[in-house]
Image (cartoon, rainbow, N blue to C red; front, side, top):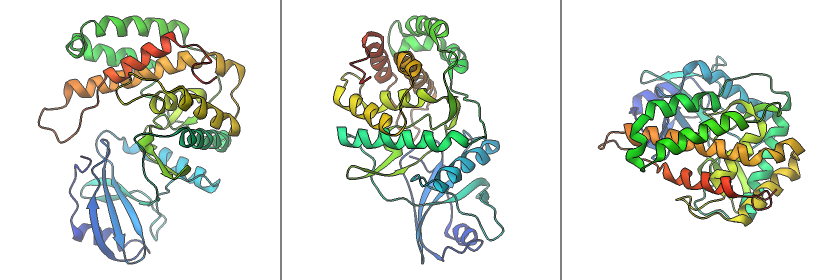
Length: 319
């Protein structure tokens, strides 16, 4: 679940009193997600999201995230902005946690996207990259290539408890990626976590792009590679859907064409994306208490994806 900090009705009412958003009618915790505590809040005027930032989100990063969302919203992208209170403040304190009241966006997250929905998502990502061309704030990617070796070391021999031989395979992949990782590709602010559950759809239309709390400054095309790994496979990573891959890339290029060097490096970037999610899932798999109210995600789903990108040619990836 994603409610780590309980918020009382009195605390919510006190928070809303700082805004011109109406009076509290009801509030309900949102079970999805693993990083923060989230509530749906209904007032006499509107529906809102209350997010309390838990320990895995650095408060010092919040101005970057909120500034990024404001920048995109001002350019017409469907992203949820944090409201300012009467004094112009976005970041509040609720129940001892930094918190924001955020716009509620309509739409549903998908478990089995269609090619039309993948195409719309690719186009939304391309438009987002275009809109970020003049966004100047920067945040290092703490889960980029520089952090993968350290995370693998922290997991250590326990990787083999997930699957025999996994540690050696990942060590070999990291060595290969360190030698093959492309230099000189365009960089920008990126979402870095655009899984289907972070896209709200109304039919075949993207109604919202949410959860920017891994956003950072990194290789722009890596954002598309991350999205490719997240959207184009069965949940267990065993089956690749080429129609989704083609649609996603076509949608992206309809809004923001790939450069030849980005296209040539795409499989390498996708292999890096697989390693990133394999390792973070492995760490959580190994360190989540058995009685925790959090559903662990299978690291091997991204090991299977990794094998696909090792073997795939450009046409199979939709390029």
